[in-house]
Amino acid sequence: MKRQSIVVPIVLLVIAAALIATTTQFVVMFNGPPPGPGFGPLPLTRLAEALRSGQVPPSAANKVVLTRGSADEFGRADEQPLPARDAAIARMVGVPVARIHGLYQFPARDPEEDLRGSFTVALEMPDGWLIASSGQRPSFTQWHMRRLGAMLVTLAILSLLAWAVTRRISRPIRDLAGAAKRVRLGARQPIPHKGPREVHELARALDSMQERILHEAENRSAMLGAIAHDLGTPLSRIAFWVERLPDDSRLRAEADIEEMRAMLKAALSFTRDGRDGAPHDKLDLGSLIESLVDDLYTAGSPVSVEAGPRAVVRGDSAALRRLFSNLIQNAVRYGERARLGWSLHEGKVDVLVEDDGPGFDLARAEALFAPFVRGEASRNRETGGTGLGLAIVRSIAEAHGGEVMLENRPGGGGRVRVQLPA
Image 1 (cartoon, rainbow, N blue to C red):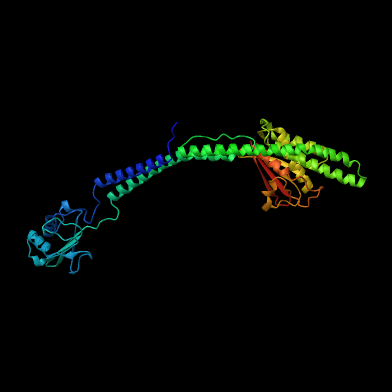
Image 2: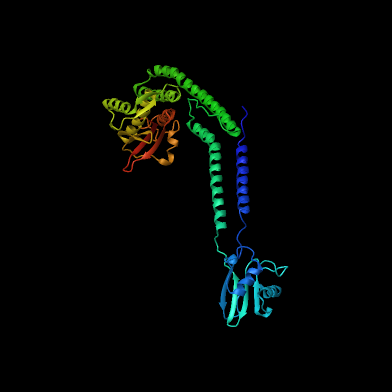
Protein backbone atom coordinates (compact mmCIF):
# COMPACT_ATOMS: atom_id res chain seq x y z
CA MET A 1 0.00 0.00 0.00
CA LYS A 2 1.37 3.36 -1.02
CA ARG A 3 1.45 5.65 2.00
CA GLN A 4 0.75 9.35 1.87
CA SER A 5 3.51 11.79 2.79
CA ILE A 6 3.13 13.92 5.91
CA VAL A 7 3.65 16.96 3.68
CA VAL A 8 0.30 16.43 1.91
CA PRO A 9 -2.06 17.15 4.86
CA ILE A 10 0.08 20.11 5.93
CA VAL A 11 -0.05 21.64 2.44
CA LEU A 12 -3.79 20.96 2.20
CA LEU A 13 -4.28 22.63 5.59
CA VAL A 14 -2.43 25.75 4.42
CA ILE A 15 -4.43 25.88 1.17
CA ALA A 16 -7.72 25.38 3.03
CA ALA A 17 -6.80 28.12 5.51
CA ALA A 18 -5.95 30.53 2.69
CA LEU A 19 -9.20 29.73 0.83
CA ILE A 20 -11.37 30.13 3.92
CA ALA A 21 -9.70 33.41 4.90
CA THR A 22 -9.90 34.79 1.34
CA THR A 23 -13.56 33.79 0.98
CA THR A 24 -14.44 35.43 4.27
CA GLN A 25 -12.70 38.68 3.27
CA PHE A 26 -14.46 38.59 -0.12
CA VAL A 27 -17.88 38.21 1.51
CA VAL A 28 -17.19 40.99 4.03
CA MET A 29 -15.91 43.31 1.31
CA PHE A 30 -18.99 42.88 -0.86
CA ASN A 31 -21.32 43.09 2.10
CA GLY A 32 -20.76 46.85 2.15
CA PRO A 33 -17.94 49.39 2.02
CA PRO A 34 -16.31 50.52 5.25
CA PRO A 35 -18.08 53.55 6.73
CA GLY A 36 -16.16 56.75 6.14
CA PRO A 37 -16.66 60.24 7.55
CA GLY A 38 -20.26 61.26 7.03
CA PHE A 39 -21.22 57.66 6.19
CA GLY A 40 -20.83 58.03 2.44
CA PRO A 41 -21.14 60.86 -0.11
CA LEU A 42 -23.63 63.69 0.51
CA PRO A 43 -25.40 65.41 -2.39
CA LEU A 44 -24.63 69.13 -2.41
CA THR A 45 -28.36 69.93 -2.74
CA ARG A 46 -29.05 68.29 0.67
CA LEU A 47 -26.46 70.53 2.31
CA ALA A 48 -27.91 73.61 0.57
CA GLU A 49 -31.43 72.63 1.70
CA ALA A 50 -30.28 72.34 5.30
CA LEU A 51 -28.65 75.80 5.22
CA ARG A 52 -31.62 77.41 3.45
CA SER A 53 -34.28 75.95 5.76
CA GLY A 54 -32.31 75.79 8.96
CA GLN A 55 -33.35 72.13 9.35
CA VAL A 56 -31.66 68.92 8.31
CA PRO A 57 -33.72 67.05 5.70
CA PRO A 58 -34.64 63.44 6.61
CA SER A 59 -32.53 62.08 3.77
CA ALA A 60 -29.41 63.62 5.38
CA ALA A 61 -30.28 63.01 9.02
CA ASN A 62 -27.15 60.99 9.73
CA LYS A 63 -24.85 63.02 7.52
CA VAL A 64 -25.33 66.67 8.49
CA VAL A 65 -25.26 68.35 11.89
CA LEU A 66 -26.56 71.95 12.21
CA THR A 67 -25.27 74.25 14.94
CA ARG A 68 -25.28 78.00 15.57
CA GLY A 69 -22.33 80.04 16.72
CA SER A 70 -21.23 83.64 17.14
CA ALA A 71 -17.51 83.16 16.47
CA ASP A 72 -16.08 82.94 12.98
CA GLU A 73 -13.66 80.13 13.88
CA PHE A 74 -14.84 76.70 12.84
CA GLY A 75 -13.71 73.66 10.90
CA ARG A 76 -11.38 70.75 11.50
CA ALA A 77 -7.61 70.59 11.18
CA ASP A 78 -7.65 68.40 8.04
CA GLU A 79 -10.16 70.59 6.16
CA GLN A 80 -9.26 73.37 3.66
CA PRO A 81 -11.16 76.12 1.87
CA LEU A 82 -12.47 75.60 -1.67
CA PRO A 83 -13.91 78.88 -3.10
CA ALA A 84 -15.50 77.10 -6.08
CA ARG A 85 -17.46 74.88 -3.69
CA ASP A 86 -18.57 77.92 -1.72
CA ALA A 87 -19.83 79.55 -4.89
CA ALA A 88 -21.81 76.46 -5.91
CA ILE A 89 -23.42 76.19 -2.46
CA ALA A 90 -24.22 79.93 -2.45
CA ARG A 91 -26.07 79.58 -5.78
CA MET A 92 -28.10 76.65 -4.45
CA VAL A 93 -28.94 78.45 -1.17
CA GLY A 94 -29.69 81.72 -3.01
CA VAL A 95 -27.34 83.98 -1.06
CA PRO A 96 -24.25 85.99 -1.97
CA VAL A 97 -21.07 83.92 -2.03
CA ALA A 98 -19.56 86.23 0.60
CA ARG A 99 -21.96 84.79 3.18
CA ILE A 100 -20.71 81.21 2.61
CA HIS A 101 -17.49 80.07 4.29
CA GLY A 102 -16.72 76.38 3.74
CA LEU A 103 -13.89 74.00 4.67
CA TYR A 104 -13.60 70.58 3.00
CA GLN A 105 -11.44 67.48 3.54
CA PHE A 106 -11.21 66.43 -0.11
CA PRO A 107 -10.94 68.65 -3.20
CA ALA A 108 -13.35 68.13 -6.13
CA ARG A 109 -12.96 68.39 -9.88
CA ASP A 110 -16.57 69.49 -10.22
CA PRO A 111 -17.66 72.02 -7.55
CA GLU A 112 -21.23 70.66 -7.65
CA GLU A 113 -20.35 66.98 -7.19
CA ASP A 114 -21.27 65.12 -4.00
CA LEU A 115 -19.38 65.87 -0.82
CA ARG A 116 -17.02 63.19 0.41
CA GLY A 117 -15.15 63.11 3.65
CA SER A 118 -15.62 65.66 6.38
CA PHE A 119 -16.78 69.24 5.80
CA THR A 120 -17.79 72.37 7.67
CA VAL A 121 -19.89 74.98 5.81
CA ALA A 122 -21.06 78.16 7.61
CA LEU A 123 -23.79 80.56 6.46
CA GLU A 124 -23.46 84.09 7.83
CA MET A 125 -26.69 85.17 9.51
CA PRO A 126 -27.68 88.51 11.08
CA ASP A 127 -27.28 87.06 14.57
CA GLY A 128 -24.21 84.85 13.96
CA TRP A 129 -23.39 81.76 11.93
CA LEU A 130 -25.43 78.73 10.89
CA ILE A 131 -22.90 75.89 10.65
CA ALA A 132 -23.52 72.64 8.77
CA SER A 133 -20.85 70.00 9.42
CA SER A 134 -20.40 66.30 8.77
CA GLY A 135 -21.45 63.94 11.52
CA GLN A 136 -18.78 62.38 13.72
CA ARG A 137 -17.94 58.87 12.64
CA PRO A 138 -18.31 56.35 15.51
CA SER A 139 -15.20 54.35 16.28
CA PHE A 140 -17.06 51.02 16.16
CA THR A 141 -19.87 50.58 13.65
CA GLN A 142 -22.08 47.73 12.55
CA TRP A 143 -19.72 47.18 9.65
CA HIS A 144 -16.85 46.74 12.07
CA MET A 145 -18.89 44.30 14.15
CA ARG A 146 -19.71 42.21 11.09
CA ARG A 147 -16.09 42.20 10.03
CA LEU A 148 -14.86 41.27 13.53
CA GLY A 149 -17.49 38.53 13.81
CA ALA A 150 -16.47 37.10 10.46
CA MET A 151 -12.81 37.10 11.51
CA LEU A 152 -13.60 35.34 14.80
CA VAL A 153 -15.69 32.69 13.02
CA THR A 154 -12.88 32.19 10.50
CA LEU A 155 -10.34 31.86 13.31
CA ALA A 156 -12.50 29.29 15.11
CA ILE A 157 -12.99 27.24 11.93
CA LEU A 158 -9.28 27.32 11.10
CA SER A 159 -8.36 26.42 14.69
CA LEU A 160 -10.65 23.37 14.67
CA LEU A 161 -9.36 22.35 11.27
CA ALA A 162 -5.73 22.72 12.35
CA TRP A 163 -6.43 20.81 15.60
CA ALA A 164 -8.04 17.92 13.70
CA VAL A 165 -5.21 17.72 11.15
CA THR A 166 -2.42 17.93 13.73
CA ARG A 167 -4.11 15.31 15.90
CA ARG A 168 -4.32 12.98 12.92
CA ILE A 169 -0.66 13.61 12.10
CA SER A 170 0.63 13.35 15.68
CA ARG A 171 -1.35 10.26 16.77
CA PRO A 172 0.91 7.72 15.02
CA ILE A 173 3.95 9.60 16.31
CA ARG A 174 2.63 9.37 19.88
CA ASP A 175 1.91 5.67 19.43
CA LEU A 176 5.42 5.20 18.11
CA ALA A 177 6.92 7.07 21.07
CA GLY A 178 4.90 4.94 23.51
CA ALA A 179 6.10 1.75 21.87
CA ALA A 180 9.72 2.98 21.99
CA LYS A 181 9.37 3.66 25.74
CA ARG A 182 8.16 0.10 26.32
CA VAL A 183 11.10 -1.50 24.50
CA ARG A 184 13.18 -3.63 26.88
CA LEU A 185 15.72 -6.40 26.69
CA GLY A 186 14.42 -9.94 26.54
CA ALA A 187 11.04 -9.22 24.96
CA ARG A 188 10.37 -7.84 21.52
CA GLN A 189 7.99 -4.88 21.58
CA PRO A 190 5.62 -4.57 18.58
CA ILE A 191 6.20 -1.28 16.77
CA PRO A 192 3.04 0.22 15.18
CA HIS A 193 3.46 0.70 11.42
CA LYS A 194 0.79 3.26 10.63
CA GLY A 195 0.46 6.90 9.70
CA PRO A 196 2.17 8.95 6.97
CA ARG A 197 5.05 7.62 4.93
CA GLU A 198 7.73 9.37 7.02
CA VAL A 199 6.34 7.93 10.28
CA HIS A 200 6.12 4.48 8.68
CA GLU A 201 9.78 4.70 7.66
CA LEU A 202 10.70 5.77 11.20
CA ALA A 203 8.78 2.77 12.60
CA ARG A 204 10.68 0.43 10.27
CA ALA A 205 13.98 1.97 11.40
CA LEU A 206 13.02 1.53 15.09
CA ASP A 207 11.96 -2.04 14.44
CA SER A 208 15.28 -2.78 12.79
CA MET A 209 17.20 -1.07 15.59
CA GLN A 210 15.27 -3.06 18.21
CA GLU A 211 16.11 -6.27 16.39
CA ARG A 212 19.83 -5.45 16.33
CA ILE A 213 19.91 -4.38 19.99
CA LEU A 214 18.05 -7.48 21.18
CA HIS A 215 20.28 -9.74 19.10
CA GLU A 216 23.42 -8.08 20.43
CA ALA A 217 22.17 -8.21 24.03
CA GLU A 218 21.26 -11.88 23.71
CA ASN A 219 24.71 -12.66 22.33
CA ARG A 220 26.43 -10.78 25.15
CA SER A 221 24.23 -12.38 27.80
CA ALA A 222 24.86 -15.82 26.35
CA MET A 223 28.60 -15.18 26.34
CA LEU A 224 28.55 -13.91 29.94
CA GLY A 225 26.47 -16.89 31.06
CA ALA A 226 28.80 -19.33 29.29
CA ILE A 227 31.90 -17.76 30.86
CA ALA A 228 30.34 -17.78 34.32
CA HIS A 229 29.25 -21.39 33.92
CA ASP A 230 32.58 -22.60 32.58
CA LEU A 231 34.51 -20.92 35.39
CA GLY A 232 32.77 -23.23 37.85
CA THR A 233 34.87 -26.24 36.76
CA PRO A 234 38.34 -24.73 37.37
CA LEU A 235 37.08 -23.29 40.65
CA SER A 236 36.12 -26.80 41.77
CA ARG A 237 39.60 -28.05 40.88
CA ILE A 238 41.20 -25.15 42.75
CA ALA A 239 39.04 -25.94 45.78
CA PHE A 240 40.33 -29.52 45.63
CA TRP A 241 43.96 -28.39 45.65
CA VAL A 242 43.25 -25.81 48.38
CA GLU A 243 42.43 -28.67 50.75
CA ARG A 244 46.17 -29.45 50.92
CA LEU A 245 47.14 -25.99 52.16
CA PRO A 246 47.84 -25.19 55.83
CA ASP A 247 44.76 -24.25 57.85
CA ASP A 248 45.25 -20.45 57.84
CA SER A 249 45.94 -20.27 54.12
CA ARG A 250 43.23 -22.80 53.35
CA LEU A 251 40.54 -20.79 55.18
CA ARG A 252 41.45 -17.58 53.37
CA ALA A 253 41.57 -19.37 50.02
CA GLU A 254 38.20 -21.04 50.63
CA ALA A 255 36.64 -17.67 51.49
CA ASP A 256 37.97 -16.22 48.22
CA ILE A 257 36.62 -19.18 46.29
CA GLU A 258 33.18 -18.80 47.90
CA GLU A 259 33.17 -15.11 47.02
CA MET A 260 34.01 -15.97 43.42
CA ARG A 261 31.23 -18.54 43.32
CA ALA A 262 28.79 -15.98 44.71
CA MET A 263 29.82 -13.53 42.01
CA LEU A 264 29.41 -16.18 39.32
CA LYS A 265 26.00 -17.12 40.69
CA ALA A 266 24.95 -13.49 40.65
CA ALA A 267 26.27 -13.08 37.11
CA LEU A 268 24.31 -16.12 35.93
CA SER A 269 21.20 -14.78 37.66
CA PHE A 270 21.70 -11.38 36.00
CA THR A 271 21.89 -12.93 32.54
CA ARG A 272 18.64 -14.83 33.14
CA ASP A 273 16.48 -12.35 35.08
CA GLY A 274 14.07 -10.44 32.88
CA ARG A 275 15.35 -12.16 29.75
CA ASP A 276 14.20 -15.74 30.16
CA GLY A 277 10.75 -15.13 28.62
CA ALA A 278 8.88 -16.69 31.57
CA PRO A 279 5.09 -16.21 31.26
CA HIS A 280 3.52 -13.47 33.36
CA ASP A 281 0.48 -14.58 35.29
CA LYS A 282 -1.91 -12.68 37.54
CA LEU A 283 -0.71 -12.76 41.14
CA ASP A 284 -1.40 -10.99 44.43
CA LEU A 285 1.73 -8.91 44.99
CA GLY A 286 0.84 -8.25 48.64
CA SER A 287 0.63 -11.97 49.42
CA LEU A 288 3.94 -12.56 47.62
CA ILE A 289 5.69 -9.86 49.68
CA GLU A 290 4.18 -11.05 52.97
CA SER A 291 5.22 -14.65 52.22
CA LEU A 292 8.78 -13.56 51.38
CA VAL A 293 9.03 -11.44 54.53
CA ASP A 294 7.75 -14.32 56.69
CA ASP A 295 10.38 -16.65 55.23
CA LEU A 296 13.23 -14.18 55.76
CA TYR A 297 12.05 -13.24 59.26
CA THR A 298 11.91 -16.92 60.20
CA ALA A 299 15.46 -17.27 58.90
CA GLY A 300 16.56 -14.49 61.27
CA SER A 301 16.55 -11.40 59.04
CA PRO A 302 15.37 -8.16 60.72
CA VAL A 303 12.56 -7.45 58.27
CA SER A 304 8.94 -6.36 58.74
CA VAL A 305 6.01 -5.53 56.50
CA GLU A 306 3.00 -3.23 56.79
CA ALA A 307 0.10 -4.69 54.83
CA GLY A 308 -1.55 -2.53 52.21
CA PRO A 309 -4.54 -2.86 49.87
CA ARG A 310 -4.99 -5.86 47.60
CA ALA A 311 -2.66 -5.37 44.63
CA VAL A 312 -2.95 -7.69 41.64
CA VAL A 313 -0.20 -7.56 39.01
CA ARG A 314 0.93 -9.63 36.07
CA GLY A 315 4.35 -11.12 36.52
CA ASP A 316 6.70 -14.01 37.20
CA SER A 317 6.43 -14.83 40.91
CA ALA A 318 9.95 -16.29 41.11
CA ALA A 319 11.52 -13.20 39.50
CA LEU A 320 9.52 -10.81 41.71
CA ARG A 321 10.56 -12.74 44.85
CA ARG A 322 14.16 -12.38 43.71
CA LEU A 323 13.65 -8.64 43.15
CA PHE A 324 12.35 -7.96 46.66
CA SER A 325 14.74 -10.44 48.22
CA ASN A 326 17.70 -8.50 46.77
CA LEU A 327 16.28 -5.20 48.07
CA ILE A 328 15.70 -6.66 51.54
CA GLN A 329 19.25 -8.09 51.64
CA ASN A 330 20.69 -4.70 50.64
CA ALA A 331 18.57 -2.91 53.27
CA VAL A 332 19.72 -5.31 56.00
CA ARG A 333 23.35 -5.20 54.86
CA TYR A 334 23.64 -1.41 54.66
CA GLY A 335 20.77 -0.22 56.88
CA GLU A 336 20.50 -2.84 59.67
CA ARG A 337 16.83 -3.65 59.00
CA ALA A 338 14.22 -3.60 56.25
CA ARG A 339 10.61 -2.37 56.35
CA LEU A 340 8.23 -2.97 53.46
CA GLY A 341 4.85 -1.51 52.56
CA TRP A 342 2.80 -0.87 49.44
CA SER A 343 -0.03 1.29 48.16
CA LEU A 344 -2.08 1.75 44.99
CA HIS A 345 -1.88 5.01 43.04
CA GLU A 346 -3.12 5.84 39.51
CA GLY A 347 -3.12 2.26 38.30
CA LYS A 348 0.29 1.44 39.77
CA VAL A 349 1.48 -0.47 42.80
CA ASP A 350 3.98 1.54 44.85
CA VAL A 351 6.21 -0.74 46.96
CA LEU A 352 8.59 0.91 49.44
CA VAL A 353 11.60 -0.83 50.98
CA GLU A 354 13.07 1.34 53.76
CA ASP A 355 16.08 0.95 56.03
CA ASP A 356 17.84 2.82 58.87
CA GLY A 357 21.14 3.24 57.08
CA PRO A 358 22.97 6.35 55.86
CA GLY A 359 20.80 6.63 52.76
CA PHE A 360 21.88 7.00 49.15
CA ASP A 361 24.12 9.44 47.39
CA LEU A 362 21.47 10.58 44.92
CA ALA A 363 24.15 12.03 42.65
CA ARG A 364 25.28 8.42 42.06
CA ALA A 365 21.76 6.94 42.00
CA GLU A 366 21.85 6.01 38.32
CA ALA A 367 25.37 4.60 38.56
CA LEU A 368 24.33 2.26 41.40
CA PHE A 369 22.08 0.38 38.98
CA ALA A 370 24.99 -0.43 36.69
CA PRO A 371 26.38 -4.01 36.90
CA PHE A 372 29.28 -4.54 39.33
CA VAL A 373 28.89 -1.10 40.93
CA ARG A 374 28.56 -1.23 44.72
CA GLY A 375 27.27 1.39 47.12
CA GLU A 376 29.95 0.41 49.64
CA ALA A 377 33.37 1.18 48.18
CA SER A 378 35.62 -0.68 50.62
CA ARG A 379 35.27 -3.96 48.70
CA ASN A 380 35.02 -5.67 52.10
CA ARG A 381 33.69 -9.20 51.81
CA GLU A 382 31.48 -8.78 54.87
CA THR A 383 29.81 -5.48 53.96
CA GLY A 384 29.91 -5.34 50.17
CA GLY A 385 28.06 -7.53 47.72
CA THR A 386 28.82 -8.46 44.14
CA GLY A 387 27.53 -5.20 42.72
CA LEU A 388 24.77 -6.94 40.74
CA GLY A 389 21.89 -6.70 43.22
CA LEU A 390 20.39 -3.41 41.99
CA ALA A 391 21.17 -4.28 38.38
CA ILE A 392 19.11 -7.46 38.78
CA VAL A 393 16.34 -5.49 40.52
CA ARG A 394 16.08 -3.00 37.67
CA SER A 395 16.22 -5.76 35.06
CA ILE A 396 13.30 -7.61 36.67
CA ALA A 397 11.28 -4.42 37.24
CA GLU A 398 11.66 -3.31 33.62
CA ALA A 399 10.74 -6.80 32.44
CA HIS A 400 7.44 -6.28 34.29
CA GLY A 401 6.85 -2.80 32.82
CA GLY A 402 7.87 -1.05 36.04
CA GLU A 403 10.68 1.10 37.36
CA VAL A 404 12.90 1.43 40.43
CA MET A 405 13.91 4.67 42.16
CA LEU A 406 16.34 5.39 44.99
CA GLU A 407 15.29 7.93 47.61
CA ASN A 408 16.23 9.15 51.08
CA ARG A 409 13.70 9.18 53.92
CA PRO A 410 13.04 12.61 55.48
CA GLY A 411 13.94 11.32 58.94
CA GLY A 412 17.09 9.55 57.77
CA GLY A 413 17.66 6.24 56.10
CA GLY A 414 17.35 4.92 52.60
CA ARG A 415 14.25 4.08 50.59
CA VAL A 416 13.83 2.12 47.39
CA ARG A 417 10.57 2.69 45.51
CA VAL A 418 9.39 0.00 43.09
CA GLN A 419 6.48 0.86 40.82
CA LEU A 420 4.68 -1.91 38.93
CA PRO A 421 1.56 -1.65 36.76
CA ALA A 422 -1.49 -2.98 38.61
